[in-house]
Image 1 (spheres, helix red, strand yellow):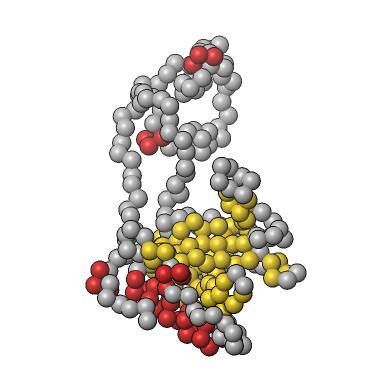
Image 2 (cartoon, helix red, strand yellow; image 1 turned 120 degrees about the vertical axis):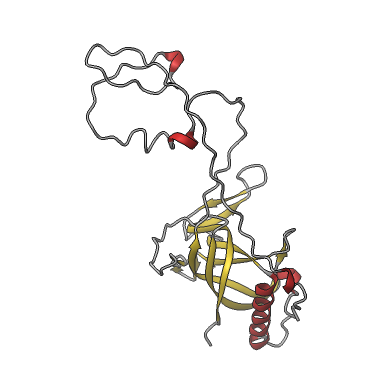
Length: 256
């Protein structure tokens, strides 16, 4: 019998690892890290968590419970309670885990399909960002084993409705603010600053104590040392609107 597929709409993607397979490595970092790996390595998988309203969580859990009851064999334990399936955040939203193994038997698994809002298929290595709003398709797989039981959510496809801005974790700067280069007003300084393909006359290297200054404009005469440009007034940095789909009126819904 084919496993049931379920569409979960308008949810928030968290910690997506879909561009390739990953595995947990306890030897990495202080407490272990999830690292990229080959699909053939032990415990390799694609994964993504999804955050949703209580109403969506209730409907999903009821469908999972019905699937388990239909597949349950003699000797299987009871379906785990919703508190074991979902993690409830301080914002009142429910989080669930989905994944897809890198291999089944001897066959390497294809990654979950990813589409844009217009249903154009995205590249297999497309990197979905955490905080993005998506629709997702999962497949119910009932199981019972010595280490646990329930219904796993096998991730099959994702449709990206709103792609969130990528957030790059970095250590706090040891410096104070200074007048000078401002990425908020001049771009990243790499793609824009060096994209001009027009040939230019050679420019002398900047003095060792002035390597952060902008490159000087080319001159026909013997090149001189660069002089810093005047500082550019800062513009407010754009912020990303928080996604919050809480409907307090649904708090009375029951998982049973």
